Image (tube, rainbow, N blue to C red):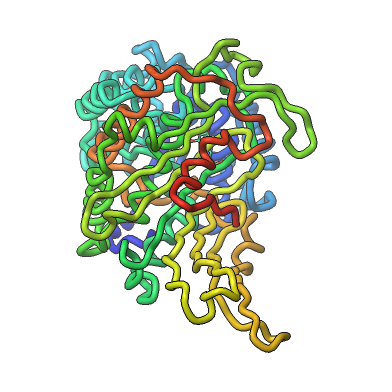
Length: 499
Ligand code: BG6
């Protein structure tokens, strides 16, 4: 997203990562920092302090980071860039459930502020399991780590933000005891993805799209985030989450709000967030009838993905053999405002499906069945597809006359493939997000009221799932989900598009 509001020019800061030895730090955060160095975007006066429980030396930790960079960085490691980053990395060992440690950390950070000239600015990044969020924030409070005269302190928090509305509210209130709302950065890594940022540009910088962007011209919109992976080693987390909490409450609702929002009055963070919020608030309430008819849950059984036999969800590590957790959701919803009333939005997400893809398909209305489409030709609809991954770009489908015959009508598919070719090297979402945190631009992070509204929406559906008797597993790994997900659209005379 291009935000017009920017914000602090001096990016000097010390970033403290709680969970410094964890997966997220090694796979995403350190590679993102490296690539910021590579692109010349990391400030000179910067330090990163990784907090971990395990005993290890600075050298040992730095070497581990180096190995991770070699594995996960999108840019090949250049020794000069690495030498620069290496000097900025510190390891600080303590158990973050013990409050004494925060006082020692304070001293350490103050020394570092002097050495690295970071101006006392702090980013606290919670890359830990959610049960530690409140404890760490309490430690930051007790150690007075976020109170630095004349400097700023920001808190970055990963999902899940609560497990329902009540727990999310409780967590939020805890955070607000230490940080103000505008210093809380709730990460939704989808917002850092190139094409998600592009939704607003595509809509609001192209007259042809924006003038057709409504129920008058659009037949339906589909948002599909489909994955081939199973739950892997995350069974313990996923059992308490399921696809609704893992993907719908956050990533999908955020995408939906960008696709359906009204143009903001300007590009300031809060103007954009306010328009997104209105979309979530306008989602038609799910009555018992709508829940029954418009929501499909699924769980994968054994199957074959890419030619390899894979276990069913209930056979995965740390998953109950009788688990009733959904690994797939499809739903149809309406946004009840003047722009969208009557145009259905179909949403689908799941694990162990046959295709790995994230895309938004906008299907325009069809022409009346007269002239060319009277009887001779089958009419293919105009489709605009925003391809988020693995291809990154825009696809557009329209009808033309075939060059090689006298009068056949054919479908022309325009694909912005030059972007797709580069997809391996588009800035990783975390690079953009970390850079924005340093700049103090919160546009790509969720504001509390958006999170609150999306929990209200999700809670209703989750409650329904918990009460409903479901017959799981109900789809084979490697397929595109339960039959009912196809029926959901077929009933309306529509189909899922896989472009
Ligand atoms: C995470 C979910 O938020 O997003 C995972 O917890 C999911 O279950 C992942 O696999 C998908 O993200 P991406 O960027 O790989 O599409």
